[in-house]
Length: 263
Image (cartoon, rainbow, N blue to C red; front, side, top):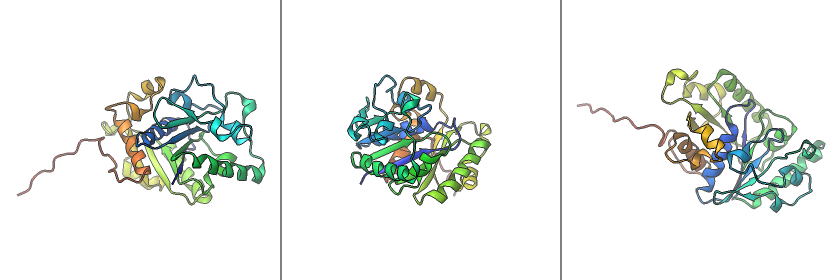
């Protein structure tokens, strides 16, 4: 059965697009057919994260407006099984909801998109809005991921997002803690347990800080495609959990300590 994943945050600058790209690539590495959709119509960057910045593509807004068929928006990437749907380049291409009818139209279209892929990952812009409400309230979404760092402002935003989603959707909401320093704990403002407690959202993954993130982004490589990279391993683990596999939270990211023997 196909699944749709909504990746969101109320606060910008938390690495949401990097997480979306990594998860989409990670799911495709399991052998699934995946569509990554850039829903940030103002400053979308998913094309850069997937190495598709030079792609001349029909934007997702043309499809939402009924001006293009579904098959025209799904563009193959350099990663096997992973396809990309672009955000518009021009402001006049923006899609606007037309009352309740517009929201219903978006939901019908989502059903059509899902049928062609095993997973569809929607990278949403920071903040809420009508489009976010229409998508988040749709029963066609199987999971909503809230991305946050451990900063006070980001935690507060994740908290507010959880409250909003509780009123909009009955879909499972999971927290992705991004950019967490697992080496120098003094650099963290909060512990993982405290983050879970304060946001009230179950954690699906902790993505450690990595110096390779910016370099990988500039090269159009999702972190899951970069070998021997703890952040990429963490995102691949999240992908496996989305696929239904049971993977320990920090599996492959931190070394296991040998247990002392007691006699």
